[in-house]
Length: 629
Image 1 (cartoon, rainbow, N blue to C red):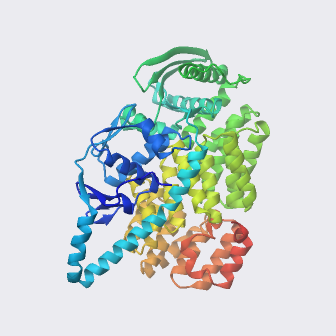
Image 2: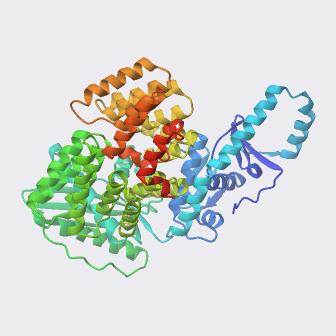
C-alpha cells in the first residue's frame, strides 16, 4: 500500500522536473522518468517537506510501518532517485545527506494546481493538433509501461521488508595496507583482506553484515570513503595494516565509528605464519565483541576450533585469490594452478577447493573450456570442498551453478542455492546464482528480488549490476536494462560484459547501429573471446550487415578447428540471417554440448522468431524447462 497521501490536485516543479504524486509520475521536460514505486514514494516525501530535515527513523516508520527493514533499503532508494535526477559526482544537488540523521530536499520547489492546469488544457483542447494528440497518447503509453515495469521492484520491496533485520550492524573492511611496500607482496595483503572479510561475515551473519571485498576496493579507490560509507549505511570501518617478515605476520587494526569518527578500538597482533588462520579468527572475534559492547549486547558466538595451516599452502591460496580477482581467462587458469598447489600441500584445506570450483565455472562461461571439461571439474571441486566442510556457502553456490548450467537439474540447483543462502546469508554470489535460476524458469519477480538482495550485500559490484541489466533484458524490460547497463559503463567504461549485454538490449529495442557499436567494443576489450565475437556476428545480422555476419561465421568456423566455440550464438547468427534449418542444427549442438546459455532458452528473446517451430519446441521440451514454473 502506498504511503503517499498527497492532495490529488497538487503537483510540484523544480528545475526541469515535474512531480505529480496522484499520477505516480515524474517528468523531465515533459518526458516520463521511470522510478520503482517505493523510490517514487521516497521522492514525494522528500519534496513535500522540501527545505526541512527528514529524519531517517521517521522515514523508515513512514515507508515501512509494519516491517523491520534495514537502513540500507532507504539508502538504496535514495541512490536510485539521485540517478534518476541526474545528480552530479557529489550527489547533493537535490538531496542533501545530513550525516547520521537523515535527508533534506534542497531544490527550489514550486507547488502547482492541477485543477487550473486541467482547465487550461480543456480550453485548448479544441485547438489541439493531431500530432499533439499522438504525443499525449505516447505519454499515456509511456506512463503505463512505467507502472508495469515497477512491478518487479514492488515485489522486491515487499519481500525484502519481511526478510530484513533492523538490528544488523554494517562493517566496511578497507583493503589491508601493505606496510612493507613491496608490490610483489600485494597478493598477501589482498588475500588477507578477503579472508578477514569472510571470517567476519561468517561469525555472526544474523547480527553483522560485512561489505564484500569487491565493493570495498571500489570504495577505497573512490577517494571518498566516508561519504560513500554513509550512503551505504555503514556503521563501522576497519582499517588495517599488515607486515610479513620471515615466518611471522603482524597485523595492526583499528575500528572507527562512522557516526562520530571516533576510534572505538585498536590492537596489534603477531603470530607465526602457520597460525595465520587463528590470528584472523582472533581479530574477527575481537571486532565482533567490541561491536556487541557498543550495542550493549553480551552474547557472543561459540568459538570455533581453528587449526594450523601449512604456510606454503596458505600462500598458494592467497596467490590464487589474487589471480582469480583479475577475472580474466588467463587469471582464472593461473588461479586454478595455485589452488591445486594449496591442496597438494594441505589436502584437507576446503577453501581452495571451493574457489577452484568457481574458477572452473567462470572458464566455462567464458567459453574458455569445453562444457564437458569445465563444469564436471567445477562439480568435483565443489563436492570435495563440501566433503571437508559441509557449511561452505561458496562451495554450495558453485555446485548450484553446475546443476543450473550443465546438469539441467533445475530442482537441484534451486536447493543448492537455498542451502548456500541458509548457510551464508550475506554471501552475495549465492543470491546472484539464485536469481539466475529464477530467470531460467521465467519467474522474473523472484529473480529481481534475489539480484537486488545481492546488490544490497555487495553494492558496488559491477558484475552483479550487470546481472540486473541481464535479468531485465530477459524480462523484456529493455529500456530499464539499457539504463542499468549504462550506469555500469559510467562506473567503468572498459567493462566488457556490460558492453556485450548492452548490445543485446539495444537489438531488442531496434537500435541496431548502437548494438553493433557496443558489440565491437566488447570484442575489442576482450580480444580473442569467441563468445563475444559471435555476439558481434549476431549484431551484424540483426543490423542487416549480412556479409559482415557471414565473415564472423567463417571466422568462428576456422577457430573451432583449434578450440571450442559457441554453438548457441552461432545458431543465433543463422537465425537472424533467415537460415532456420542451420540455426536449429546449431541449437541442437548447443543442447548436446550442454552449452551454458541453454539454461536461458525458455526466456531468451533472441529465439522468439523460432519459438513456434516444431524443432525448437522439441529442443526446449528436452531441456525440461517447459515444466518449470
